[in-house]
Length: 620
Image 1 (tube, rainbow, N blue to C red):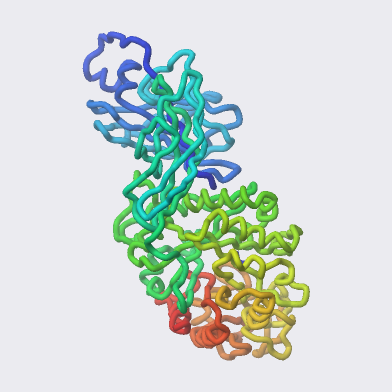
Image 2 (cartoon, rainbow, N blue to C red):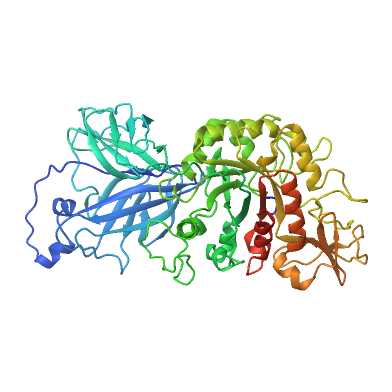
């Protein structure tokens, strides 16, 4: 969209066998509860680390402390070493300090007490790429024992592969781990939890649900009981169930972009889709945006996505988030939305105007890039939230905020790699240019060749003209057709759709774009398009652009041209779509055989969702 981390969690368990004798302490019983001997403490409490996010320049880590004993624990202290260059930059739910590369985390006043079986977590943001080592919890090993001298834990097994997939089962196989004293068995993990322990290197998981995604990994244990690192993960989708995430035959798509940053200044949240009535009209949501960095798909704003706590009155479900629930933020709200409206499909969109600069570098290894995107989108913590991926590269082999010279085949290569990685059970889509000028952006990449791997394209048929040309001429930013005096040939929706169809892109894979905003100039004396200006008109968030919900009352439309509206009020001149012009565009889209429409973005609409309704009603 032109107006605008990620690997699976790596878990490290610290597993050793205790060899030291238990010392006799002459301390009162009360003191023994809070200050146990190392061997005693090891038997009662464990700490487990996971890297929950990785965005290239930093990461998010999480420690979970669990009381596995029979007495209440009154306080906890976790200590570990990071290699040089890795450090904690901020932390929450614990007081974290360091001495050089040695880090110490102590409980807060409100989360130090753990009854038997209870657990508590704290998290932190960090920089560097190292993993913690030499973990101690209340002075003992973090997993309930001391080290076994001269015995190393086993290596990670190979990433599992899946075969024999049915509606209710899947067979997993993996390459063996190695150990200096011998491997005893393997834990098979589904979604991070152990579902079986086997002595061989294969396992068939049964009792699954048809048409459902499952994430598997494995972990080896040696003859001394030490466990090694967890393998890479594989996602398996059982057969049967829902025929797929796409629309059915004859169904028209009504897709809206939901912006991650909208929860801040715009105060627009997932619940607004419900209160506005928009959730009843849409078919798909593009959650925007994830970033592209270091050759990978990465998280955009992790706080907004997975950590922001919602009160009961703010949440879709009407229930408040708790401090210790596994997933909060927009992702959890989208999960609640899908529970309420199960027909809505959600895609995670990566790139956009600001974050498209990393695509060219990522496409130096398409398979690795696609794998990173899949691992992030299908992370077990939120895999149920997303039904696929949307790639918003502005623009392959052309210039946007930055320029790319990867060649015309790069876009096809990207979509091919994504389809290979995401498979047929997920949606793979892209937002693409609408520049139909001779030698323009549509001519720069193989959009037709890539269409075979894409479910559809969001053709960005808006932002053709705007106050970046500060002196004008004034022109509608989203003309449906050309008109006499249009500033640039090929800059209109009809020409863009016609050119893509002529190149071989099927009409049903093209969605017409609608902007829920206007673009405008000031210093304008002429009411009709084509007037001169002195610069961009004032906007709430950015000069030259304003939401429809504001313009509707501030500068009502008083004319139409090329299938869209314009307004001249005072010295300002704006162009934008209204329910009436949207109805005309939807009729045109149906006559062209298009797959439907999409819009940027929800928060520009009125509180009662009148533009979303206009699209939905127009596509019937």
